[in-house]
Length: 188
Image (tube, rainbow, N blue to C red; front, side, top):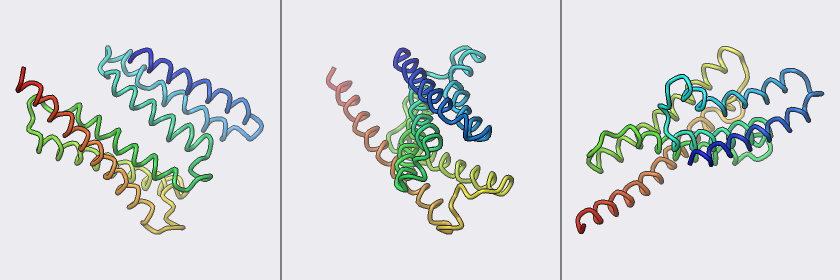
């Protein structure tokens, strides 16, 4: 998994550098926006360096996939503007990813019902916190990341709903996997 993560980081950084070089003539703000992916993609490796490997490879993998989709494809390549459904795909995927991270926080031996409730609630909390972050940023620096002018609260609500759906999809996977593991343990 470490090699896959290094390859994903390398691919993301190469794609970013190629894009940055192609956009130098568009101005410093565009270059800085596109350059910020270098820090965001490298962040788990920096955290592990300073905190002696506290993030596992699964979390790093999830982070890199999300950064590639949301930051590189969504922001840098402007897929959010070019394909209106892209935002919902990314938010659905974020629900799956945050559900995975929530699963990592489960205490050993947690009952399946509690586990699923925790995973879904953790993911829903992450979606809420992200939408709150966007709202506060809009208030502080202007802009309309939540597309309130065009949709009212519809975009924000749909973002949270599809993240919830993603978490539910992950929970089905988690339930099936957990049941299979328990059946194997029973017959061993």
